[in-house]
Image (cartoon, rainbow, N blue to C red; front, top):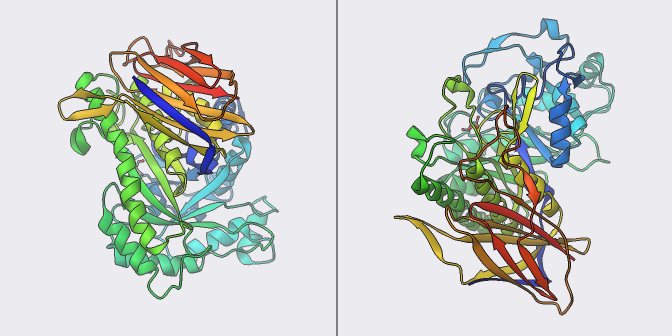
Length: 502
Ligand code: AHR
């Protein structure tokens, strides 16, 4: 029998709210149609932003939004996206589907979207094909409060006050689509570009600079970037490198084939979950390299692209990366976010790819219709971990389940505490069986369940469609009994559960 021992007296660090962040790119229908429809659209909107989508995103308390890419970021020239919309440059989005990008969504619109969602801003600059001057001027345009060419231009374009840029990415995937650089070459470019990402306002928190980290298990990249960045630089310090990124996608059948989002067998189920669990190894190993240069963990790891990446839906533009989202995605989300929580000493930000209509989205839209995916509902439950203290917790007696080489633990968990409320999130990874777990608290007190919820389906392939939008949703969970400081929990197969006790 599995047992979960929780030590409420042993706090292991704060779970940065930004671990529950999101990523948006000028890709397919993520920005255009998904979030931005323009002021003249018949779809209800405020300043061009879809009201239904903004409301749904507020409910999951999106803490931070990354934009404009992705690969798009290193081809994006921000001046194309400001000023009179009718005069903005039209161009081809060469990376994603070869469609016309009319630049009607630019800096002002992104800042407005974040204002409406109530989230922090993460702007990704162009190091691959842009200049130092262009990057520097963008930061000046967004954040300078005095008299300067860029601040004046912003004011002319209708925004008197500067905005807050909370995070700034100095390039994206510069080992690949962002310039095909070597780690040493990128690191030297990083040192140069970041110098001109200035903080103009002493009264505000400085901009957090995000250095481009590795893809998957490219430890050579992490080592080369860290070594070169900290050569002749005395020590990790705020304002030089605040974050190092990591990108990892789960492709059940590998990069070439990927696999269907909705049609999979039990073996592929376990294969997908095993690959999701690999995030733990990646964080541990990249983190160990970071530790050599930054033993005090001043630099956060930003897993700013993660999620499932399947073959796009039949009949859709392959360049749009539109995919469905099933109970399997809910499990990938639950597993990954428990991993992030457990690594909260190093992982300080993460962005799911991508927020709407692309890859493992929390929301899908079709014209004026909108649905919440199973992943959305998991984010809704896990929002209680944002800013909470991670508690020491350990699962014992957990069996390995799976098929062939694709073996996974039957359960995963994480536990946190905030304002006297303990949040336990558990995943049952089994494709067939319910699982029991005995929970043991350390403190000698009579605990009560304040709230318990579950995301699951009648079948592991279940998903929401525009005709049946609530096949998978968050529901009240009743499979527990409490006896003083112990609890017995019975979870159905393929389920993600949140229990809150006080
Ligand atoms: O999210 C889709 C793409 O995946 C991003 O543009 C890129 O950064 C990554 O390779």
